[in-house]
Length: 80
Image 1 (tube, rainbow, N blue to C red):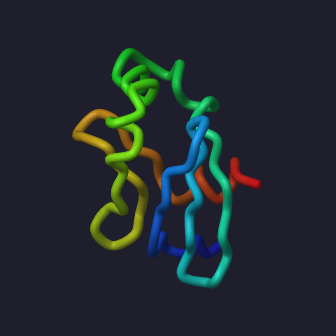
Image 2 (cartoon, helix red, strand yellow; image 1 turned 90 degrees about the vertical axis):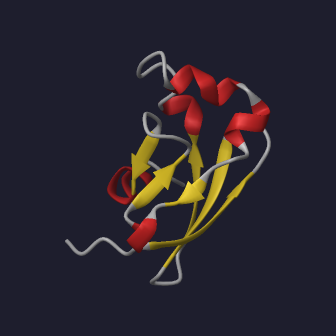
């Protein structure tokens, strides 16, 4: 399976990310799914931290800092 690259992300209310992919798909990813993964992901509860999301170089995922990131594969598999 070929996973498209992420080209844009827009943080929305209630820990939802609107993620655009290189193949034209747009997915909504609910970060409630990952918030309890470990103590670093708990930082997503802070709205200013959450809204500071960015697309990784090459479009292979999303990151907030060195400890909080989500791969493009996880986003495409677990999104609506």
